[in-house]
Image 1: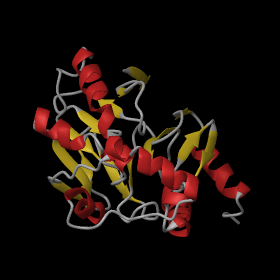
Image 2: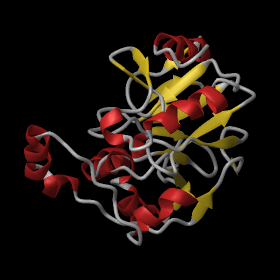
Image 3: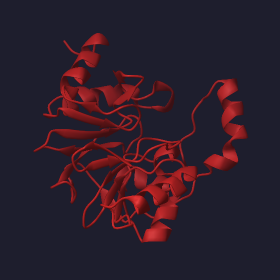
Image 4: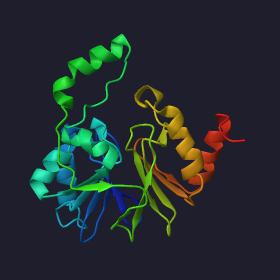
Length: 234
């Protein structure tokens, strides 16, 4: 793992999303990548001098497989507490269907061929989060509900240090700050409304996205510029 900012590590070489790790008495992981990332997560946590070799809590920013694929196995191995927003918990537990997306023919063939590697493993959610809840990590992470990418998509906000873990609602792939991927976001307009009305009102200088490189310094301005470039701010 590498330190991205003081007190926050990022697991290296995952196939799925960015996986962040916050050491401490109740070591906390934010998202957990694809199912095939489990061994990488386990090895790097075990090798970390700051982790005590275990994961106390995993917080899912949303239910998509590239973010929750390893959570079931981690819970089995470590007795990890699982947290997710109440609107996404049912999908993770298998009582609500995983939303299907209309893909072009090439993508459909690709995902069908790799299906055995990307099998969804349901997991019990121990804590159902709602807007404004506080997670005991980094002195307190506030849950910001940002529906649109999924009904229960969340960001986690550390107000004193100005840090935002944004999941897929805001990404920075190839150095371009952007909103959620339209192809996989049934409520894309709602997601951008949430960015405008809920995210831009937060004071944050560091953005730790679910995909792409962290933005260290000037993150709020970068998100505002993205919104203006898309004509979503007056």
